[in-house]
Amino acid sequence: MTAAPRQRGAVARLGTAQTLAWASSYYLPAMLAEPMARDLGAGTATVFAAFSVALIVSALLGPFAGRAIDTHGGRPVLLGSNLVFATGLGCMAMSQGPATLFAAWIIMGVAMGSGLYEAAFSSLVRLYGQGARNAITGITLIAGFASTVGWPLSAWMEAQWGWRGACMGWAALHLLVGVPLNSWLPRGAGAHAADGDAATSGTAPHTSGASTAVPAAAAAGANTRTGTGTLRATLLLSFVFAVTWFTSTAMAAHLPRLLQASGTSLQAAVAMAALVGPAQVAARLAEFGLLRRMHPLISAQLAAAAHPVGAGILMLLGGPAAAVFTVLHGAGNGVLTIAKGTLPLVLFGPQGYGARQGLMMVPARVAQAFAPLLFGMLLDRFGAGALWLTTLLGLAALGALWMLRPQMQR
Image 1 (cartoon, rainbow, N blue to C red):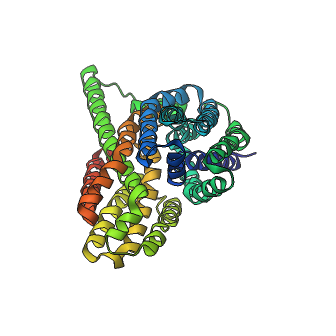
Image 2: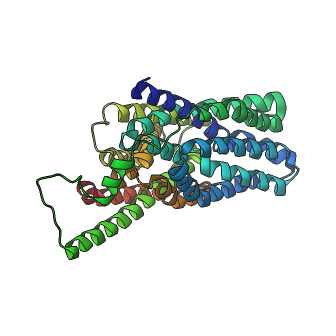
Image 3: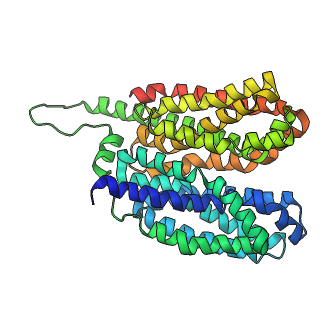
């Protein structure tokens, strides 16, 4: 089998496994939080608080999972995440109160830190090096339907078997579907060692017939500048990813209510909110086609501008602009999800990608954990005016991406 079909097969399997992972974790509380709370005698806020704890655990674990993928490859880490997902979901199904529910979500946090997009992106970079950009886009195209698949399936299982049965059903899917999918991922050390070393060292291969002796002091100065530039770029990207995750999670939790506060009816708000998924997938298809010849930093800048532009239109025109806002937000979020995988690869190279990716996503996971609570409080107090927060954050993220242009040129 040639390289291209092998890569397509790996993308299809990994994308399907990611759909399962996201549907059974990140998108689970939306359908099961209320029946969980009723049965356990707790408030719905308690269930979401346990979910927030899981996100913080995943943030703390991310760098370690990334380093493990750099060292051992993605296959064992992702396989292990399926087993941990199944364990966490099984413990959730057996919860008898808030304490055991929190314990189950902590286990889920371990699985999320080692089994969601960051781990998948790191696995692809370990396998394909600089050629992983299209593969990263491919798995986000498939897993972009996680909510489309996960919400109805969770609702169906809850209606048939109750929320405990739904959790057990997702656990079984991890064992029966997730484990085989991730076990079929290619083994091997990956194809990036040589070009990764060159990318990170900043040196070209030696060519006979040309002497490139560099004074030691000049070389030391160049290395210092490179190190400073790398730290600066890492901090800027960490900020951009934190803003992206905060806004994405806030909208996922409150979009229908936000649209109602802007002047739409409940039915229209639900219908408009449903446009986010298709807009994400359409934007990712555009990134795979029209935008693939652009530097990913340029497509990320366009995507970062989408939410502030849409929010401005919504605040100006109100309910009639709900569809425009929803589509722009979804499109921007769809491309920025890809940028979380491709920008670190392009700017820093594949060497040490997993560990760096895990570190950069720590602020994002923490911001994600507090987004529903903070944005909900602002929405309660200011209504649609709460959009000023995500608009200003989006503009700040766009500014950070513009500050990365010198790094791109180097």
